[in-house]
Structures are given as structure tokens and as C-alpha cells.
Image (cartoon, rainbow, N blue to C red; front, top):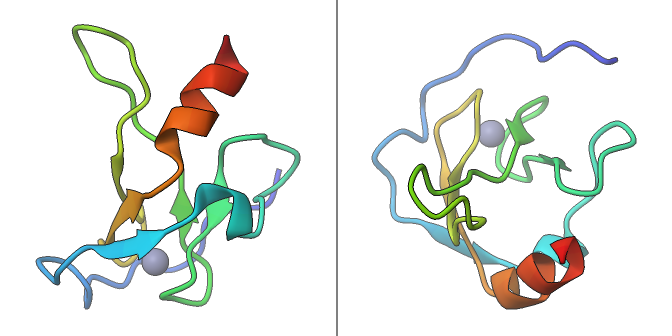
Length: 81
Ligand SMILES: [Zn+2]
């Protein structure tokens, strides 16, 4: 597994970026994890609602803190079954 690199925090608190999950580059061999388009080596993991376990539309890069809104989250939820 590739390691998540240095931690930037420069995008914490910035307005969320709308992104299509299917357009992002997959990270490793995961169907869900994506490379963060806002920093060199960040990863978007796709979060899950603690109560409903549904995939969340809002996600944050683990490295730079940039928020993303998946515009195609419905497709992603469906694919999960
Ligand atoms: Zn990032």
C-alpha cells in the first residue's frame, strides 16, 4: 500500500469543491479511495454516516483538509449495493 505523505493543512476550512467521484483518480486498488486533486499526495477515503452507514456526500482530504462534495454519490451508493 502506498503511504500517505506529508501533512499539509492549507486547505482546511476552504469552501468545498464539487467533484465527480468517477472522474477522480483511484488511489491504490480501492474502488472508493481517490487521489486528492488539491494537493500532491492526499487521499479521499469516502466517509460513512455513523448512524445509517450510508456513504457521505461530503468528504475531506486526509492530508490537506480540503472538503469535497461528490456530485455522483447516488451512483456510488448504488454500486455498493
Ligand atoms: Zn489534499
